[in-house]
Image (cartoon, rainbow, N blue to C red; front, top):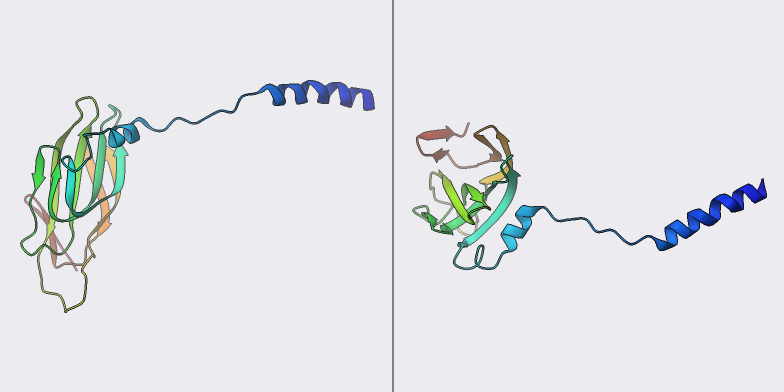
Length: 157
């Protein structure tokens, strides 16, 4: 029994000692985000802009959602600032890695309102992003009276 154990352990030890470390590969969209000149000061800007959710479709296009204060520039697309600069506006955009450009971007703007001195209204958030065919679904929250994207307006209850 001891001899069988040694015969089994010797080849196992040899295989483990000769094996090379393996490394995982980063998703391709992370490479697109890190490419110089794509998301630099001239490609993805806005005062306090951030990406909070991403999704990738079957063609490899990347959808991003996040928030921004002020004007947001995504490549050659510009989303305007809210009239007061606050609260945070939500954005959703489609990045096409094959062309290295944004295909479109949408601003979900909230109704500006006044806030007590010293408060900072960061209640609007895009937290999740899901795709179904050509439909894009955004999950999140907003604390303002209403939030609009184009002709669609959501009213806070």
